[in-house]
Amino acid sequence: MKQTRHVDNFIDYSLYTNTLEELSFQSPLLVNTINQYSYCMANEDAGFKESLQMSDILLPDGISIVAAEYLLTGNKIKKISGADLHHHLLKDLNEKSGSCFYLGASESTLNKIRQKLAIEFPNVKVGTYSPPFKKHFSPDDDQKMVEAVNLFKPDVLFIGMTAPKQEIWAYKHKDNLQAKTICTIGAVFDFYAGTIKRAPNFLIRFGLEWLGRLLKEPKRMWKRYLYYGPVFIALMLKERVKKTFFNRYILH
Image (cartoon, rainbow, N blue to C red; front, side, top):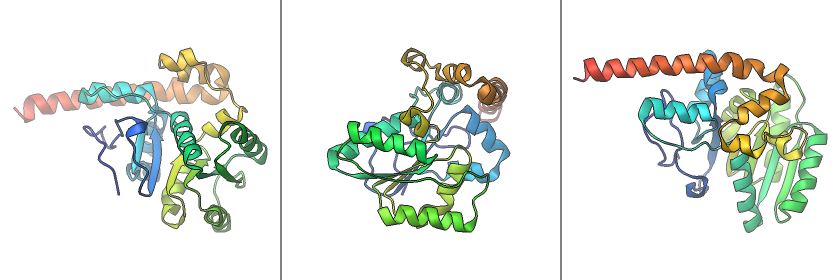
């Protein structure tokens, strides 16, 4: 059941606009994030778009999304990243002696995550599964992944397979997964394990985490930010013009 959490619709999506502390995890939830890149990709992929729209919670993960929300609705919201969600849930699980499961990444990365969790969140019971590295999973792959999760029955399932694969997979299988909360958090697996360094805190604080990622991985990230960034801006300006025209000439 979706929680009451929305301000005005961000075009085709309903964003979560409160704080993580105000989130209730009492009922099963599918939690995804959206940024300017995933927004643009979803415009080209109907399956991806549906998986984001059907989120129980959709977090605004990016300064571009925050700015677009203000441009289109006048609402001031705060960025909530996958890393923020991950840390918040681990703290909560540690206090409650809960459990979490990491689905995704390599065994090497998962080992580093387990080692770090044992130090930072010792009360959390942890399970992991590294799926095969391929573009499309077979039915057998899917079955093994679901079985691994359900054998553990975690309070929180973290999925890290990159977008849009992780969102589409989570949406497709959520009804068969025995987890109270399902979160797609992508690169957070590598950030937490330390296999990829997150941007410095001062860049994150000023909404420039994207710049840090671009500078660290220019070959992999240039298209995400230097191509899709302007595409996203153009889409938002177009929506702003449409909204202004509608309000001025249709409503009045």
